[in-house]
Figure 1 (tube, one colour):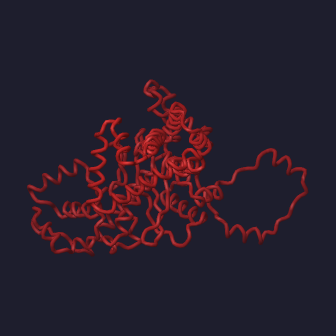
Figure 2 (cartoon, helix red, strand yellow):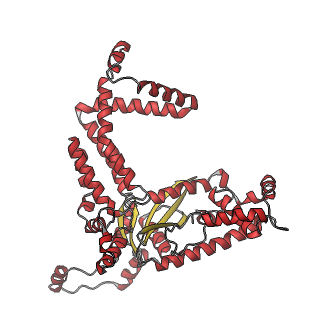
Length: 454
């Protein structure tokens, strides 16, 4: 679990142990400095420092670190424990935090998860973050950050997700799991969806058919090899879809048009070369920054004669890049909105609707509009998306129903349909923590203990 694994904006919400201390705890510790810290307070401070900065636990054995700790006023006889004892302390606090988290999740009625798999140091890891709504506020916690061995096929992914859900008792509470659009992710949810009864038409057609006999041994052997679990509904990451539109679809369109191919390839190649050069060294970055700062101070009518004098034919490229940025800006704004920490599914349809209107207003290429309608076809016609937007307080004033029975109904609908996030950006933020642990700085951390740090 992350140091700030569960953030609750409500004081009545049960909070698990958290190494990121509250203002009350910090004030208490500051008052304790004048009288001397107790052993528990000292260990809590050191644990917060190690966990929040992803440092190896052997830090407590460092002589220089212990010299720093000795300068902290403590009560008589209080000393920082050695590594072995400190590991036991962290494990106990982790168990306590995990128990509090399970108790909190047990009270939650609707939950949603986001998941993804990434590779670092030739090892595949699966991260899973949890999002819930409590009193119309969003809470979050990292449920898992575990090693995935072998190929991450659909059955492996499905088994891991269900195991994580079941370990926290979330089988019947998860509204949806948000993942990116890699082929093995949707297949895991498509194959492992709960079995539904056949339609009436299928049953009617079956009544006229001859009875069929099945080999029981063959059926059992086939079933044992397939996934014997069920997963919640799968939501595709909207941020990933927008990224595909802005790269794959736009790139394909610009390269297929004779009027834009030359300008697009030339301008993008120069921008890429400039970006690469600026990232090679500090001096190169400073030179590029200085050149750009001088260029942007020039009036718009001056670069043209300057380019003519220098023999640079870049008028079309500059015009192309200007129009390119104008058309792509709405996509970047939508991306920032959907990747926000407090963004819910209720914001997805209004964001897409506004995006379509802006593109129509800009009279941009129909390829981008068609790409949005094609890739978000299921979302634009989604009843869940409409209900999420209709019950979202950002778009509807629900306070006028306060004190009435309908308000409680709308509140429950909001918590259900807005529990999922439109983007899997939450789990991607977990990757940065995993990268810190799985680096030379964290080589002493065991793979099995990674989830305790994340």
